[in-house]
Image (cartoon, rainbow, N blue to C red; front, side, top):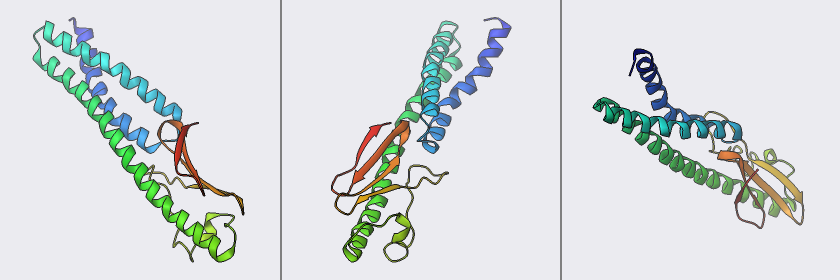
Length: 180
């Protein structure tokens, strides 16, 4: 390996090693931005061959540091994907729990007043101290979206999740998620 490719290798290696964790952090904070998710997924996919090339280069030139770093890169990407999946599941479950507080308050409001409120703010302070936000993001506040349909049909409650999906439920339906 000549001097220029060797420098490039040592410049790209730490960048490639950070792709996995940075990818997870950005995707978790911007779950409703499909273009960011797709771009970072593409970068992660490109990092897999980089890790394999590092391993092959290290093994063929007997540079075991290259083999170890290449393996670390691949393990980092795999661990990042696994951690992202676990964190998304945790945040989704927390969001569903928060939404059930809203649904209980909506049902109490309806039983007391005969109809659903026009906004979720009408539930405070009698039925809820504050209207909870989703747990989808830690840095940004993502509110639940609420649409009263009518007195008979009830309401729709929803929120965006990772990858451009949207989860919603009605008064008589359970939660379901679909791509947007």
